[in-house]
Length: 339
Image (cartoon, rainbow, N blue to C red; front, top):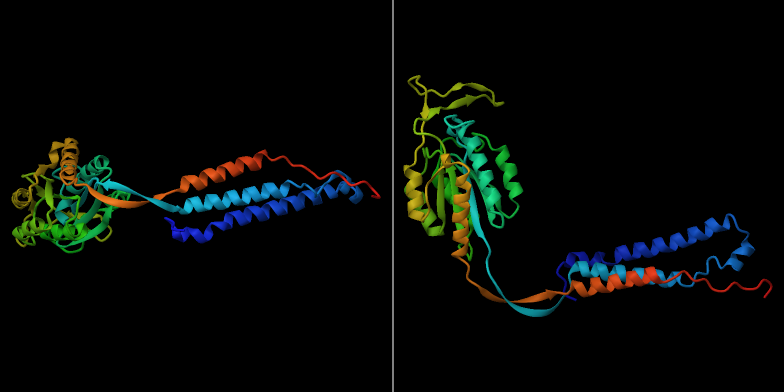
């Protein structure tokens, strides 16, 4: 028999065997309990221990549990032709965790605001596979493509500036990591949302554009921060604020929003540059972009699939359990004493 879950098949008979053993032990315990209050010669007169239908009920229960276990294993029988359609898009979210994302020109900070907006986006892209990339001077695939958006949220909640130890910020590294996470182009739409202040101190913006173009990725950068900017906080090893970053001349280092490289990346890939300050409407707009990308890739393909016939076995198991419940406990007639 071909089954959907072959690893489960060896365990099919275990619950049934346990139920049969429990039924036998229960019957013996009942006889012992009655024997404690009834004389041995009276047991024969009462027919205790000779319930002839108990064995039938146990057999029905045993077979029903075997059938139920086989149903859970997913018996595949028969074929059907159907046209399959890829649903949803594959979306990578790349979050900038460089030191400049700790700037508080947007409250409570650029990174906190970015995490909040990504959370709003996740609420609206259910049904699409999502991956999470964290980047600064280098990039790290924190969560591979998955429908479990809860896993993405867990890493988002733990994100903090400097989480990726490489200093600086590289859009090129983020796009390369996204392309690797998405794999070779397939039948679904492929999108990348980069949430950053745009201060690309490392990498080559033109190389990032070329990577996105070759990988067939549509990029939607989200700019977080202000043109006025703010000083970059400095913290100690345990995260306590110790001051602001200063340059070699002793002056405060001011981090400002940079959109040139992100705008080039969006234009070249067919995406759009968004400003985080549009508020909650940002998630709605991005979700609309993702859904349009998915719909543009829906090309049907024919496939022959084996059908899971678990309903037959589950129905038979239910019928046997009902019969087992209906069968009365009937004892053989008592033998006459001295007969």
